[in-house]
Each structure stands twice: as structure tokens, then as C-alpha cells.
Image (cartoon, rainbow, N blue to C red):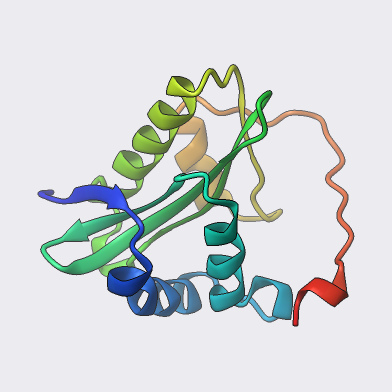
Amino acid sequence: MDIGIVAFDNACHREQVVALWERVFAYKTARNAPGLVIDKKLAVHDDLFFVAVDGDKVVGSILAGYDGHRGWIYSLAVSPKRRHRGAGSQLLRFAESRLASLGCVKINLQITDGNELVEEFYVAHGYSTEPRISMGKTITSNIG
């Protein structure tokens, strides 16, 4: 697969990433609305938002984060038509490399329970399930 991995550019990539996430993730909650997630990520200015492009077409995306101790992988998405051709692996390796260059010593991620195909993908890339309880709290006043 001949794709490039580039930093997300809001002017060039936003519309395509929103459409990709709507198709791939189909989130039903307001806190996961693609436009909101993109705006919140861009406000952090951490340069850890990347897209896979084929020419001017976005075929995948990944968000990463780093808090100075651990890195996180969020929202890895690949167009269904481009799956099983290496784009997801390229995006993941690229984000891992960027996190490592920042001094990150461990990368975490979360997937929804019962998503065996995604779990298999991450296991194939060296990730393992850890005994944890994932908890969350929505701050509705920040959703808009």
C-alpha cells in the first residue's frame, strides 16, 4: 500500500476524518461527536494527531496522547475499503514512534469489550490485555 502518514491539518482533513469516524465508530454519545473530539484534540496542541493519506484522500487516522509518563492510543480508524492492507499498522507504528521520541516508556489503549478483531490487531502488534478496571466520568458542561 502506497500511503503517507502526515500530521492532521484541520483545513485539509477535517471533513474526511469526520466522515471516516462516523462510518467506523458510529458513536451515539455527544461526547464522542467527531467534530467535538477534533476540536478538543487541536486545542491541546500536542501534534499527536495523524492521518493516512492516499493522494489527497484520507484513508485512516489515529490520535495519540502523552502525559509525560504514559502514552495513549485513541481513535485508530481505517476506511473499511482499505482494511487488511497495512494502513492501520502503519498508523500505529508511526504514533508509537512519535511517542517513543517524546520519552514515553509505556503505551496504553482501550477497546470496547467484545471487539475481538480489534483485540487481535493490537495483540499482533505486541499489546496485551492487562487486568484493569476502566472507569470514566462525563463532564457534560464541556460537551457544548
